[in-house]
Length: 119
Image 1 (cartoon, rainbow, N blue to C red):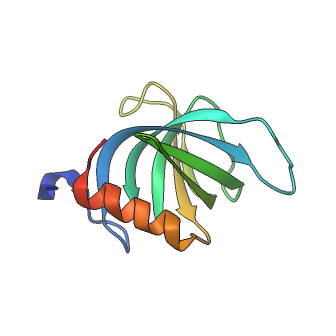
Image 2 (cartoon, rainbow, N blue to C red):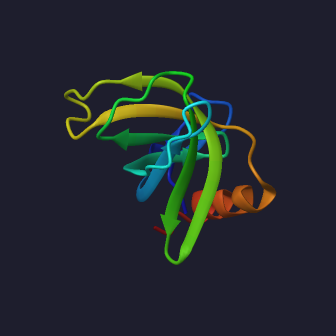
């Protein structure tokens, strides 16, 4: 069960705080095939906060993958904000990402993670 202190209420959809492995690649028009590692810090139906070693510009389209047990959740998304490493997160860039669009199967997996917070 998720406690109130683990939820982030600023967005349209609630997010749960977690520490989940993942990666991303930049989509068109860049056509970057290279995948970069990231850490998911919070997750909701509408998006995620990732920590990346590399800066990513606002507006950049991404294909993201999250790793949960044996499952890989894949979503297309777009960067909506970014912050340089700092006191809050010295290990990397904080990147706010909005999902667009999300396949139903991915939403079901995201809902499962949020509901059960089984990382």
